[in-house]
Image (cartoon, rainbow, N blue to C red; front, side):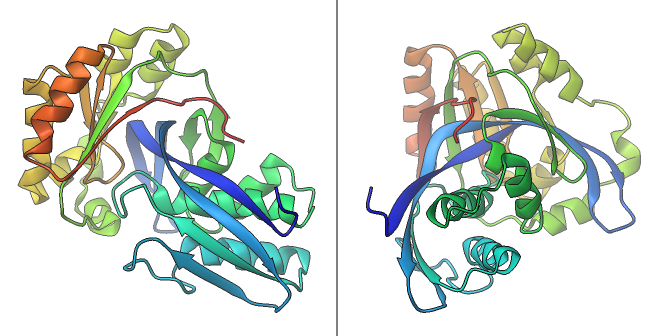
Length: 291
């Protein structure tokens, strides 16, 4: 590795559960969710520059490259926290779909914090990096830790748990955008007292019970997004029809994922979706620490 630059991997995540517990006084929602990383990742190359500026470029043209970008925000926070006076240029090789419920932007921000910690020899602990990341976005703390975790609060309180049983993950993202704030805004908290799945999911993972993992899949935001966007419902129905063991929408959507242990069934689901949805991926659960 050149000491003037380094490369960092930024894996996507899926929500195996997302339980909304209450509306918080700060406007966020109190949530409890089980997340795990998957083998679909952006790659960041971080370059030193002598001029005291943060600049970005990306392999997709429609991603903002200024202070609206989580990578820019993360780099600025690190510079301000540690008084770094040199600049940085960050190239983002984008493989994770954007605005898909897969934490692509959050994972990129986490990779930026971890990469700059190494590049500038700042000596931050994982906990310090996660705390800094929580100032950028709710999922950034989890992405700093990586692996599989139970997340609480607004997503920043992380408890590591074991890796789920190995399986295939088939992802399908319809060509629509979903506003997370709109989905939360349409959520009826009073209807969510039942059906919390996170504790059941943690137990199934600890037992290495793949069937139990599939039974415990749950997302309180799913019904809201399915009502707003019929395409998401259609993808879920197709995955079940093609033999998925478990199907769930990730985050606020619109990406839906299917789980299966069998490669033959993975191929059937993947091929069955290709003609219906342009963005389809077949990957594995990583589930382990990606630092």
